[in-house]
Length: 225
Image (cartoon, rainbow, N blue to C red; front, side, top):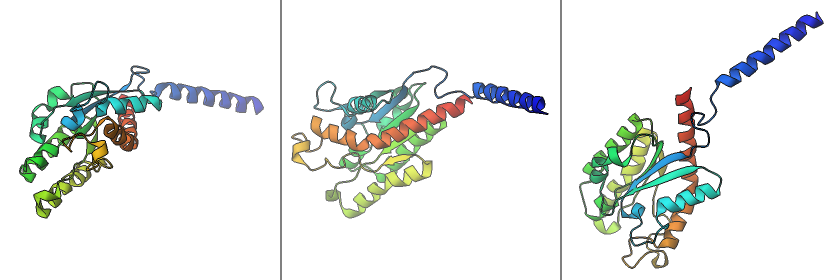
């Protein structure tokens, strides 16, 4: 009886070990490879008026690495870009192999008073195309200036939470939270953050980007299975 029980235990241990060996570890295809992220945006992403190493994607990557998270964030910010421009360049701005994208577009649509419906359709298309490629997404929202009128501003502000809910993606409600309208944290134009302003934005965004990395990693593991 005892020998039979011991035999069963040995078989059970062997079965567990075999099963465990068949389950891929996170990023098992290339151990240690960083999560590859693209920051798709405008001048707020590109780092307008800032020095080397001061743009938002660079600062975010530095903070994540300091926290022990292995990432590579490509800066796909283009000064003056709109949601339409981001959609037009989406395929080459987000090449194959990218696992996550931070979408931070819409500020220039708002500043130039472009049609809200068009901006929403452009962002909707961007999110849909990225999801179709199995890419994890963090949508960074923008808020309209009240000088454009309450109707325009309220309608514009609703774009981001509406689309985030529709597509089931992460939402960082307002890219410039804690920095907008603070002269100490903005350049002379009153629009673009200083290096210190970018640092504060990055620190506020960091928990959301950590979530994004976790989603991208989990999606990679799920695909491998």
